[in-house]
Image (cartoon, rainbow, N blue to C red):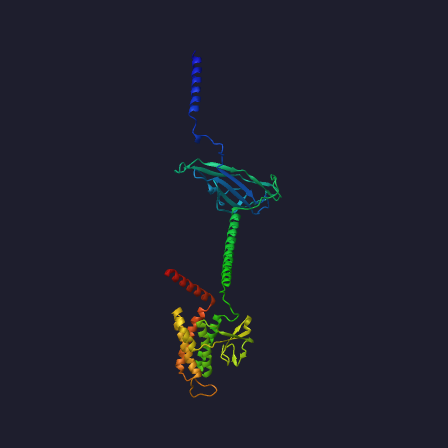
Length: 432
């Protein structure tokens, strides 16, 4: 009867347990879902660059590991034993090594070491020498609900040994004679750097191409609207200004040495007329004089000295190696400049003083050239205008032409034009 009562109580307890589990099932977090896959906390691979080496020959060994690195769990390996100074691979010797930057892919973090090994010893000829197993120790840090990480007990991951044949083609344990490509994280970084460099160069070339395309579109729009500027195949304005400035300086040096003469007055007058035409935006007459040699005289005056010819034209070289000579001249007078002054003052108050300076110089030198003269030799009469006034007007013209040469330089000229257009647009916009 006692034995029968015990069996009855046991069956009753088991029935109550099954009924409790059926009514109150286990929490969902404790039940493994069908889509949950077990992931190893740490995995490592070892690759040897060569499985057949000579005694004393250097060869590489690459160690790659993947560890779990998420918000809730993180593997913290002990990397102190993987440094080249502490790694033990006896009987092999570690010569040097390096660690590459870590690579993170999803929930895993990859780190990689490269070691340079060699083996020295006369007892290893013709033998398969094993690289000893590598034991990597690590701990798992867990964090629940973003709290403080809890460090688990120390675990170990062991890589199996690998054999290296000394003075043989392949080791006895090799299953494939083909070697794997020896690519490392460093090779990936080098390729990424080259890709970024090529990308930057491609971007720069694309920007330059876009700029050229934009300039072409602007030019096509101007031609379509019928306002394209017609450029003559002549000497650039800034080169004309430079030649004229050189001529005025040569005249100043000559007057310092020998005083003012009729020829020097004529040279200064011709150069000032060209300078005034440049300042007013008037065209300068350019006449081709043909090919000349270096230092060849044209009309009795040397081209290298930039002196005017008997007709009052200023020579300047053009073309490849300066073999072609172009004669510059202008018929601008003091009265022409006087008529242009109101327009100049209306357009630019800053440019009016320079125009007035050139007008005064033209008036002074014209009076000296075509006015009355003092007693002097008939072949080279001296001017009637006081020499001190001519020198002052010449120096003032040189100062104006120095500034004009800079303003006529094509990049500065374009920038100034853009600035004036922007100021005009801003003024119109502000008034509207």
